[in-house]
Amino acid sequence: MTTQVTTPYAALVLRIALGTMFIAHAMLKILVFTPQGTVGFFSSLGVPGWLAYPTMAIELVGGVMLIFGIKTKTIALALIPVLVGTIVLVHGEKGWMFANEGGGWEYPLFLIMALIVQSLLGSGAYSLQAIINKSRAV
Image (cartoon, rainbow, N blue to C red; front, side, top):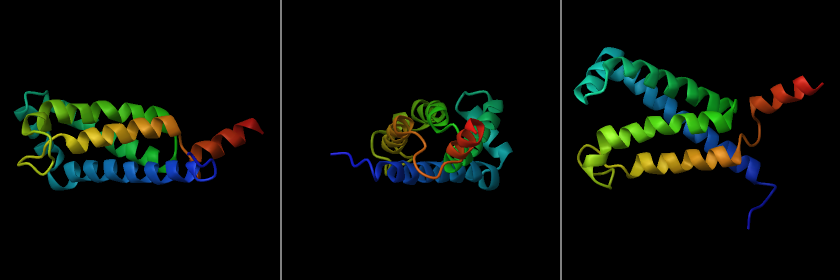
């Protein structure tokens, strides 16, 4: 049974967790691997290296927007192709278990499902979008 009272807070917790994860992944590419290193990695996969930049940007901006609850449904869905790309280009051939060498595809698939749930739930409690919408209605 779904509890109407706690559902907005569940959406909030999921939103913050997903946003934090995407920011962490973007910062890993920016600070640890460096943008040039990330471009090189993308190129080694046979993907145009320049795609590293929009990938880092969508992870960073998307993560921030999730945390603040801005356009949550749209952003959650927009982040799914990034994860599909990791399955198709990086983790898919490594098998199911993410603990496999090089990481399998179970974790990215789980994150895709979490993003779908987030898009169905919406922003939940304490979203900046709700404040923006309220101020426009006045």
